[in-house]
Image (cartoon, rainbow, N blue to C red):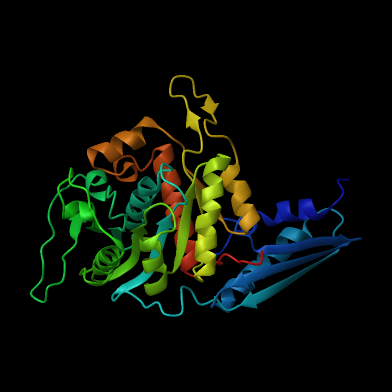
Length: 354
């Protein structure tokens, strides 16, 4: 008979899915401790959720999963039910008509943050959520190119900006206002002004999600956003190698200092699968995003492979998830979108003390 230990208990609990989603409670980071004493098993879970029925269902399914372990006579499941914490900085306010504002950030450039932001927004839309995407990178806007339009936004009678519609999304970017070859030469006060205009003076209408594509780093634009907008949370994008993870930690630290919840990490360019023979190559290393997510106690929302179709889709103006939803990359972005919705629509939140 195989001896039951803490590891086998956690493995058994992977059969327990969070209600309404395909993801299990272990990968969500809900299991705080698992202990075996003779023929008794003691498990402690931590949930931050408003609906007590969620906790009841999880408790029931955990008891069932543990009862069938060999040698286990009595399972004990304790759930620490917490109220979801307040988010964002104390002085931050909501954007009118928008339920959830989510920042997509990275500590450094070149990790594919705009690709992730664009495809995440598109995936949310395809999953049925009313979604907008705001390109907050004033110096290097890329959303106009990635969605294949240079249409200039109109204005309403009360001088509010009408966002550009594309593939079911509402879009705003400096790329819609300037010539592609003209740099945005802006200093601090102007940066703050434009950022606030994009967020507050755009007629976003009723949205479930507004995705903010932040510039890399931790500068004026990021601080303007986190200090003035009530963010539901932030998604941090990295690649697997250590040089990217070092800067990702800085982005996480910025959000932590400004009381913005990190909803999870997306590991972009996770691996490459050769189309001719199906062999996987870990070009930028392996497992860096997962290790960092575990270290921070936040979910790893997804591991996005690198492929030519994603680059081609961005260059030709259609996010790959819109062009090829059933591709490996498309499926991963749909998974990320649903995991994000799980975090924000009744599923567990990231815990800073995990």
